[in-house]
Image (cartoon, rainbow, N blue to C red):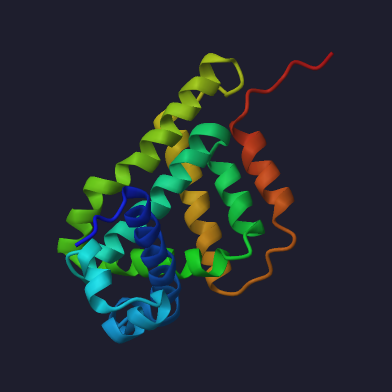
Length: 191
């Protein structure tokens, strides 16, 4: 039997995650049946579960993949940029649906919450580290603890997710994000 390259395996894994993201967003966790996952990914159950032990492992990997992507943006540009990207993303609805399903499972499933807690710290850590770097560079206000600023920005993100989930208009939110961003920056002395 021929060996499959790591690049091929990685591409297949991403294909599965992309299809699963759409499926979970459209049908929710319970409604994302194996048959629907097969349709959404274009792959057989054997191919899907070769990469992921079970549906929950697939969902956790998807949520973790989203968190890694967000953490990378946070490390480079900050959490407000994640919010801006969410407003501008053409596939934001799929990410949003997965994010809402993640929130629902965190609220209703203690075992899932425990498994996710091990993985979710990366985004919080990336936000905190970015804020610390900004503070050291003199760009961040220093009258509020970085932990509080991190919680504040995460809360704004969750509020934005809720706003979008309710289908409320989002075309006028850029000035709101400008305000959020300026609220954590150090005030520059007026000349």
